[in-house]
Image (tube, rainbow, N blue to C red; front, side, top):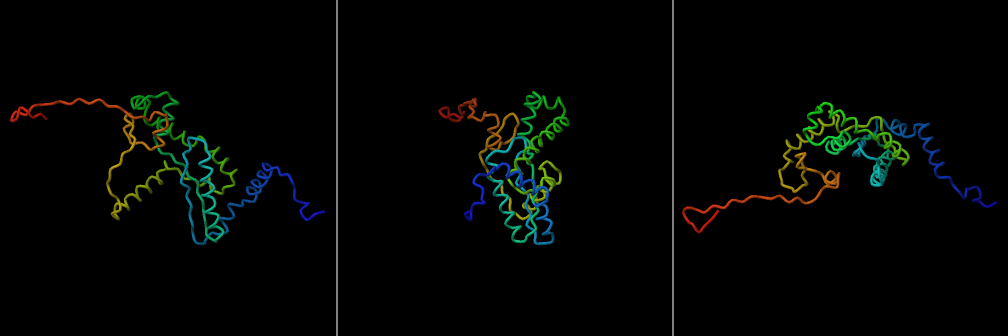
Length: 224
């Protein structure tokens, strides 16, 4: 018998994954790693949230590993590292999905339906894939607190953003500039690059203009 004969030559990796996750869940490994360091210097981590109206893709998976490694490192360094999940609920993509589902076309239909009902439909859409996100992120082996998740549509979150913006203004750190951005004529709002690609309709627009020409009375050879 060689010294390595007890090492299996074949592994059922999915079964191994399941056993590890079950043990972490049963023994509350993540929760205990946070609780045992209560009172230690704080290293708080609030996840820069994904947009919950779609399913996770490889880009989310890559950044999830980065977001997991750093809190684990500071935990091993003895810091108290609570880790909160978050949900990005910014408006336009949600409104766009609701309009498609309900067969609405523009502001007139929304007003006729009622802003209160439309808003509630948008809120209900935000966490449609929350369970799927939690399942995938947990299978990645990432440790994060879903129960204490924050949502950008929550009033305390919005108020904190306005407070931070106000403080920047007080400190003289804000400035006004100019930037060319995509613009939605129907929604009457600037668009992010992601929003501009939602319906594959982002394309150059040709606007016709009417120019009037007048002769100057003081000089008939000059026009304006």
